[in-house]
Image 1 (cartoon, rainbow, N blue to C red):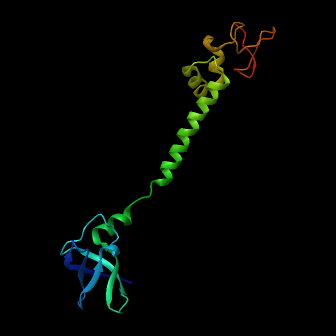
Image 2: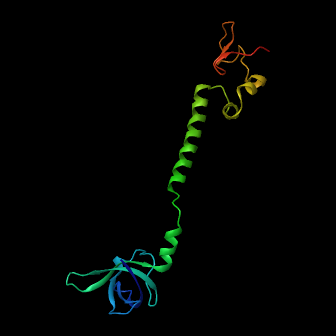
Length: 157
């Protein structure tokens, strides 16, 4: 169960202080290692929530303390890790595919590779820049003009 209180005393040089419970009662010891946000240093008057526990000698103390403003921020925070992973995977897949197209068609330019990826096959057949010719090393010169670029017979001119 979580309780609420305010810092009544804080010794920053020694890393501990005391919390006055909101509903009254004796003050509770709190060590800095029991504060969730260690980047923020407590000051007298800060409002916190905490769990009640006891130390080795049976004295009551506070643990798992969180600043009230910190709790409100973490409650509404959306995890972005999965979005970053998926986006990175998509970028990596695109780069790998462009590399595959470049390796499988070595005489092709980067512009042509990207064009092949995003344009329909019919657009490639219609553009003379991408048509097979006997002078191109990627085309078969056996007479039937098979072009591996299009995966079949090259279009007639």
